[in-house]
Length: 527
Image 1 (tube, helix red, strand yellow):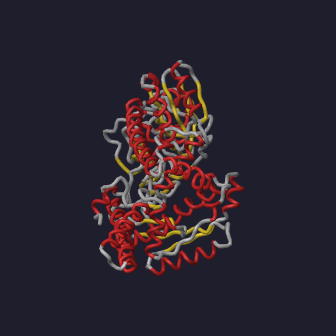
Image 2: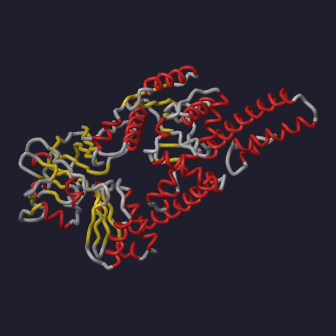
Image 3: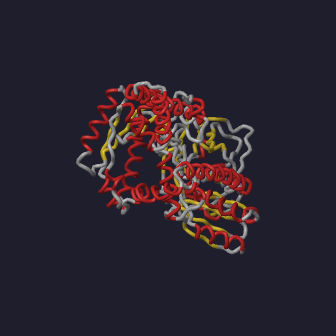
């Protein structure tokens, strides 16, 4: 009998049912030749084959986790558990492996059987002593509200539920029960709808905090595992509903492809694996090109907008091979949570090559791409609401939303050299009128820059400092009861000039927020 190690060295992890039947037939013929009672020998053989299949799949699962490091030691995982064969198999395998996880089940509010399935899922987890969490969603209403199909609405509801539960139960990862068969179906769907390399790469084994531990296994293998262990599972009627594209691929297209090549599932999976490796390599090259061509936007204040905009040297990107240029532009847009169609990517490429000035809005409407003879810029269009908060003296005032912080403390003005564009200033306490606070810049703001006689508009000072539009709305302006006294990195007002006679001074520092684990990372300003 084939050993576990030999099984793992094959092109797929466990033998499929066809191979098992062939082995069974060989042993049956052998039994007849040596004149052993046929019925008794078959019982033994079936038992051994069953045990072999179970153990081989479990060993392959553990080996896959060890090699891939999908689930680090000490991680807590939320497993999406629908009650189907795939997710039931995953829950049982993870339980056998002794992993720390919670099974999460979402009631979709679509079928009468859903209540019974929820109860059975909970009972199964209770029987094997696995923590269980459940939730409910009105998927038809979500589909109507978002004007999307039921399949997409269900996926939206599931991942919203997974994220909510994983946060509440302190889970590091979310595990879904996608199989090699799901991967093949997804690749075919992408091919039919039109796609690039990333679409042909299929389903990734890890994306952000989402892992797919049984992706190397087929649906046939997960069903066999459940049957051989006597595990309850249900079949989703949607899998047989030809109104869904995936069902048509599963029951019409894949059987036809298998008639051409019985191993088509493994062949497509290998193709996806090859393309995924090459896609990752090209993405790495494109990311390196972006890093090398990124411009120093906003100078010392670049941290204000590092999460919402980036600018790149046009000539350096334009010198890239076209394939790499397009990929680099798409990556820059994807980093801000949007995407570009092929037509949009080609439009950017055409504009950059011709050194024209132009712009377009990426898919989704929240990111814009702008290009001119000097640069290519991608930025989010999310509006920033005006803000105003008191400044803590002494102490820290932190904006988790924008990623900056003020530090204020009493100090001495002795030996201090004041600079207009510094990120640290020394203010004569006697010159400050009333309480200090900070707010967003407003139209008409003026300051009298240190060392200048006349007043200047803040908007003009921003322009001279080449501050981007996104940085301008995020930069806090420190004020007293009279008006603005400091725009960090831009201007210090003449009213705050040191005379050398100060009895008390206030030191203010402005900079990027320090990532202190003890901070409560809530959006907003925290004193």
